[in-house]
Structures are given as C-alpha cells and as structure tokens.
Image (cartoon, rainbow, N blue to C red; front, top):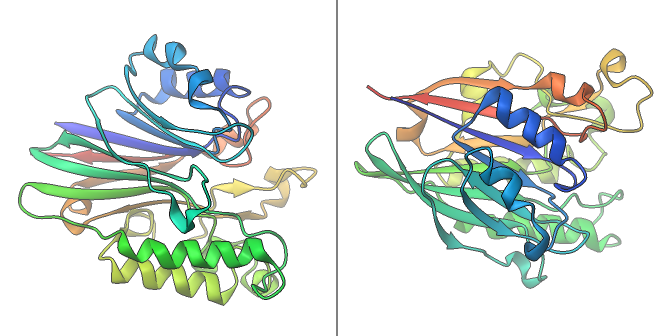
Length: 268
C-alpha cells in the first residue's frame, strides 16, 4: 500500500487552475493541500477537481486574500477551521482521513507573511505573524497505535541556514530572522513534529520551495527559500518513502512563486 500528499501555495486557485490540473494529472497525489487560494467558497472551482477524481473537497476561503483548500481522492472529514489570532482570516483547515491502517489528522496552514519590517513594535503584520506562530504551539503531533498527524503548508519561515540562499544576508529579512526561525523550531519540536523534508534531505543540502517574482531569471540566480513544509508525527514519519520538491513548476507558464512539495508513504 502507498499514499501521497502534496502541498502548494498556488497564489490564486482560479487564476492558476490550469497549472493545478496539469500537476494533478502528472503527479496524482492522493491529497493536495492548497494555500493562498484567494477565492470565496461559493466560487471555488470544485467541478474541475471532481472531474480529475478529487471528489472529496474541504475549503476555507475568502475574497482576494488568504484561503486554504484540501482536495482528496479518498474520503475526508472536516475537523476544524480555526481562526488563529481572531483576525477572521482563512488560514487553517484540518481534516481527517484513513491511511495505512490508521486515522490521520491533517492540518493545512497558511501562516502570515509578516510584511517587510521585522520589528513587531512598528509593524503590525510582523506582530501578527509572531502571535500566529505562538498560537500554533497548541497544535501538537498527536498519535498512538491507531492514529497519527500531518501538518503541511506555507509556513512563511525558512528555519535552517541551508533553507535560504544566503543566511548572512537574510538574517534581518522577514522569513529568516532569528525570532521567527527560533519560534517556529520551538513550536515544531515542542509539539513533537518531525520535519519530514529534512528527514529525507540532509540539513547540509540547500533546499528551496519559493523564488521571488522580482528575480529577472529565478533559475539562474537561484535565490530561493524553503517556506513550504511537511511535518508529521513520529509514527507517520516512519512510513515516509520519498519527498519531492517539484522545482520545475516554478518555470511553468504564469507560475506561482511557490512550487509543490510531495511526500510519499509506503505501508507493509
């Protein structure tokens, strides 16, 4: 038996629907978690995904901003749409499904970007981001013999030195400042989560999932950051077989600035 899950900040699901369809046809993950869908629930293009076999759909969207969606080829149950920091933003969606003889709780997150100035005293967007990460400490990697947990999404923080193109130059840039990276890692380890991408790809290797639109040639400059993550409870991590960053998607026509990440699991 096998199972796969993908996460992708799509930066408008309606604008980039052809890219999502292309991705699903080619890679066929069992579940796809999208972030920054920028789409009210009533206008979500569900029929397009149902036509591809993704008939189980959970969405939490809003007009023009934020939004998350979980699309599945197997049954899922909606567990929670949590309003972190009581801002009214659609940034979290949890669902439950069965795989490998266990019930899995899946969290789909879109963490605030935090603006440009890494000072919470003068930048309310950065304050919001730090508060959001602090509140995420309540989200733990619950597991036992019959259950497990997965957390995926655009967490908008690149925690390791090798998760950015230049650790030294980005230490004072939002997404890689010490207060962010230390906060995220403290939340992850305190919650019992395993960083699945770094369990598969050694921390010594550079690893990116995002490249800015501002780069004239994103591939040549390769100034990326790992902003997208896949975490699991230890028992789910033990079944991991492969993690793939679909770097080629950054070069597709009218792409998102993020690329999909796919985690594949195998069960005896």
